[in-house]
Length: 434
Image (cartoon, rainbow, N blue to C red; front, top):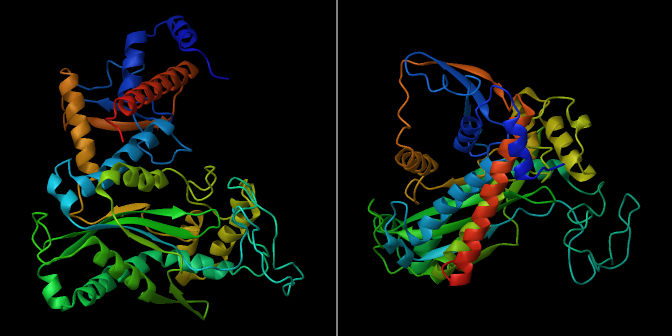
C-alpha cells in the first residue's frame, strides 16, 4: 500500500540517529532507484564516510521496467535522444542532418503458424476445416488488442516452435546482410555502380528490437543517407527518401540466411509484412518515442523473462503457455553442446542481439549522454568532486536495508515523475512539444 509523502517524511523523522537531510540527498543522487547498489569506500576522502550508514548508493542503471522504473525511464530517455538526434541533430550532431534523406523501416519475421490477431473483423475467416491435430483452422471471433488470446497459435501442434526460435537467433545476421544488400539495391535504383556509390554515399541507422506477443522479433529502424566523409555531410549523389525506401524494401525482400540445427537446414528471411516509408522530419520526436519504448520490457511484458534462466527455472515462472513453449524449445535446442547459445538466450526467445543498436556515426552514444548528465550534476552541486583513484571499494549488496529508505525512494521517484508530467503538459499546451 502506497503512503502519502507527508506520512513518509514523518516516519523518517522518527528514526533515531538518522539525518533526514542526508537520507533524502543520497536517495536523490541515486534518482530514486528501486534496487541501488550499496558500495563502501575506504581511503582518503571516502565519499561514503558521511553517508547515514557509511554506504554509498549507486543507481542500478537497468533498462528493465520490471526491475526499476526510475532507472528504466532514464534509459528510455537516453534512447529517445540517441535516436532523435540522428534525425534532427542536437547532442553534438549538426542540425543539417534533418535535410538528409531518411527512411523509417519496420521488419518482421515470417509466419511459423496461424495465430489469433486483433481485428475489427473475424480473426481468421478461411474455408472451414480441421488440421492434422483435429483443431479448427479458422476463427470467426473478433479479438480486441488486449485480449490474452491475441498472438497465440490457433493450433499449438501446428505451430513451428523450433523454426521460431532459430529465426529469432538469426535476426542479427539478417540485419547485417540487409546492410550489404541495401547498398547494392540503392546503386541499382539510382542507375550507378556500387563502387561509385560507396565513394559518395553511406547509410547509417538507429534501430530497436521488439519481441512481439507471438514471440517473434520485429525490427524498427531509421536509416539515413550521408556523404562518404566523416563530417555527416549530405550525400554526394542525388539520393531521395523515396529511392532509399524502395531500395531498402527490395533489399529486405531479397535477404536470407541458412541455419543448421540438429541436422535440419532452415532457410530464413524477413516476412512479407514490411514497412519502408520516407521519414517526415517534423515527426522526428514521434519516431524516436515509438522506437525507444521497446527498450524497457522483456519478452513476456511482465518481468518474468528479464534475466537469464537456469535449467528448471521455467517451471517456477508464471508465463502464458505459448511463451513457455518457446522458452522450453530454446532449452531443448540448447541441449546440444554446440548449440548452447539457445539456452543462454532462452529468456529472449532465442534473440541474442542488443535491444537497441546504431551505427557509430548515427548520432551520440549512451556514454556521452551519461557523461553530459554527470557534468551537469557536478556543476549543480559544487561540492560534488571527482573520487580519488586510491579508494578501495567494497560491494555491500543490492537494494535498501531499511523499509524507510525504500519508502523515501518511492516517494521521491513518484514526485519526480509527476514533475516531468507537468513539464510535458505545459510544453504541449504552449505548442513547444509536438
